[in-house]
Image (cartoon, rainbow over all chains, first blue to last red; front, side):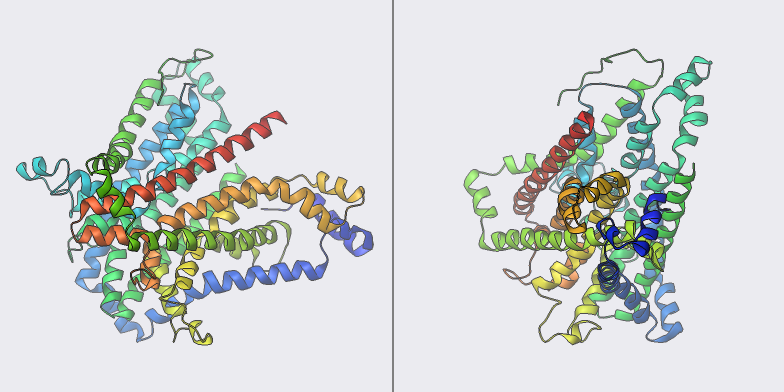
Length: 290
Length: 278
C-alpha cells in the first residue's frame, strides 16, 4: 500500500510553508490520532492476544504440551480439520459456480440472488444451528424418516458440516463476484471463439485470473470454519472425543475451570489466526501486484 | 422471487449458464433457503396468542433491549474509532503501520470462543485491565459491549479504508485553495464522501453483533433479565427441548436482521446509482 505521490509532495510542503496546513493536519493532531489508534488497538487487539499466550504458558511447557496431546483435545483437533476439509471445498465450488453465473451472464433477479447469497451473514450462528435441528432433529420435519432409516445428522458430523456450510456460505462467492465482474468476459469470449471448450476456458483463462481472489475467499472461509462456535454448539451435542470441535473443547475446559488447558488450546487457534492474517496479507499484496 | 432463465441484451457465446446457475440455485436452496424457511414454517404452526406470549415474555423483551442496545453502542464506538484507525492507516506513515493494518483483521480470524475467554479474563475483577477499575466489567452489560466492539472493529475500518484511499486529492486541494481550513475541508468535503461507507460498516458490525454468541456467552455472566442476550435465550430454550419457543424468538431476531440487511442493500444501491450518475 504505497501512498500516492501527491501526498508526499504535500508533506514536503508542510515543512516549507505554514499555509499548507489547509491540506495536511498539524503534526499534533496527526500524532494524537495515531496514538489514539495505537492505544485502541493495543487495548482491544494486542492485549487479548498476548493474554492468551501468557495464560497458556503460566504453568510451564509440560502442562501446555499435556493439554494439547490430551486425547480429547486431539480428537477435537482432528474433527475440526475433517470439517474444514469437507466444508471449504464445497463452498469454494459453489462460489465459483455462482460467480460464473452472475458475472458472465445477465439475467433478471441477479440482485436478489446476490442478496440471498449474503443472507447467512445476517443470521445469528445460533439460529443457523437451530434451523438444522428443526429440519433434521428428532422432532424435526424429517426427524421420523431419518430415525426410521437409521440416519444420524444432528449431534453427528453431518450436522456440524451442514451448520458450518451455512455459516461460511457467502465467503468465497463474495470475494469472487466483484473481482470477476471487474475482469469482464472478453478474455473468455476470445478463448471460446478460438475453439477452446468451456472447461478449458475456465481452467486456463478464468481460474488463473481470479486465483488470488479465490485464495483470499478460501482463507476467510477456512478461518471461520475452524472457529465457528455458536452454530456448531447447537448441533454438536457436545459429545466428548466424538462431536467436540476445538472451540467447543475450549468452552468445556473453561467451564470446568481448567483455564491453563483452555488457553493452551486457544493459543493453538490463535497461532492459526495469526498465520491466516499473514497469508491474507501476502495474498492481498500479490493480488495488487498482478 | 422472479428469476427468468431467458438471457437479456445479447447472446453470449460463453457456455455453462444453466449448469452454473442451476447448481447455484440448488445449493442455495439446500443449504440456506430450505433450512431457513423452517423458522417460518414452525412459527406458522403456533397460534397467534401463543406466539405473542412467547415473544413478549419479560425475559425475552429484556434480552431484545440488551442485544439491540449493546450492539448499537458497540457499533457507534466502532464508527468513531474505526474511522480514526482507517484514516491513520491510509494517511499517515509511522513505524509498525503495516503490522497494525494486518492486526485489524484479527477479530475476523480469531475464533469467537477464543476472543470470549481472553476478553473475560482480561476484564475480570482480578484481570490485567479489570483490576484498575472499581466497578465490574466482565459479567455486566459493559462486558458485552466490549466483546461486541472487538467483533465489529474490522467492519468499519475495512469499509472506510478503500473509500479514503480512492478519494482524489484534487477535491481536497480545491477546497483548500478556495480558502477552507483543514477542519472545514474534513467536515464538508471528506466526511460526506465517507458517510455511505461508515453507514455500511456500522450496519455490518451491528448485524454481526446482534447475532453474536461465542464471544458474549463467556463475558456476559448470563443472568436472566440482566445480562442475557437473545441468542442465549434461543440456546437455553433449545436445551430445554422447547423448539417452538426458541423458533418464535428466532423469528423476531431474523426479522430484525433482515430489516438491517435491507437497509444495507438500499444504501449500496443508492451509492451505486450516485456513482453511475457521476
